[in-house]
Length: 99
Length: 263
Image (cartoon, rainbow over all chains, first blue to last red; front, side, top):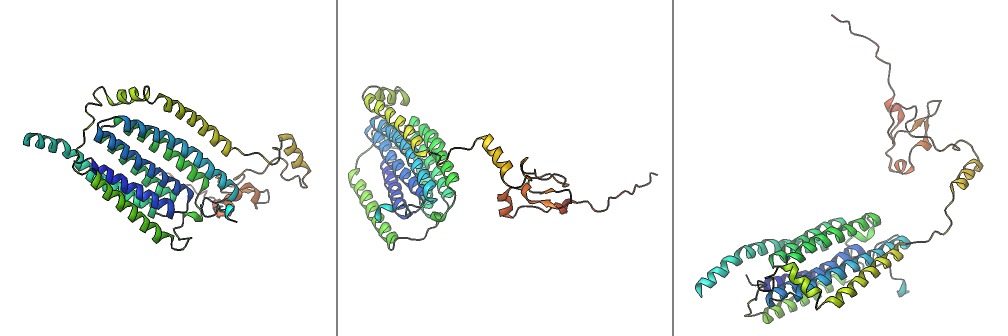
């Protein structure tokens, strides 16, 4: 099987994640969609690593996972902080800078 | 040449089957993530997606990353998401109504454009290329290969990432911490307040549920000496939900004292 199929899948998943970030309002779901985009990028890295016969891609994917874990921890802490002061997890409600 | 082609075809077949079964399922799960209403269902679909990606990693000669994906993503990150979901609960932001006019058609148009661009680009870029495969790179083992790279070429980024992890942990603690506006009342102050606040009825604490009633579950109010229910003995949130039972339900009628004669 052509390894490029994985790249097509990765592009599809990335696009779906991007739509989710724009369309959904719940901050947690938006966050999950960002994770989906990161995962799609990881799939590309792993596939390119296989296409080129080189483990560098897998190491980069590993680093992406670590950074994503950090990002999740801080992001969820921000969501909890916002929820504590505003009693809402909707991203449309946090628009204080606009006014 | 033909032999080689047959060999390649045979070795690639199980992977192709795996891909064509799992890829549509993972795309469906990703789409479902956008379309389902409840955030918890999104999280479940996300977990499914991540596990199928882990299987793809393992199928692509990256067993270490596949296992890390299961442990870190479906294990730690998704649990964190579910914890926060439980903490935040369900609110109006779960609804799928459009708040900004025309956002959805624009988003879908942009996505179709972007996705089409990516896929056509990939179709052109990878045309006619065959993958090298990781057999030689993984000769000494996948984990060993990654470790060799990680501790030689990437040792500096690796250290920087450790600093990032510590910063993230500290940052989340700082964000999640909140100061009390008033100092916490001590046990002594609480006790004094209890005796000074008007009636002495609750000075010894609130009555426990079920006392003197014929049933001692938390949703049955205690009975006062005159037989009426003590409202303070049941949790307020149970009362608000309407889950409090009437103690009278458990009262016995006339006690059956008849004894059957033994024959």
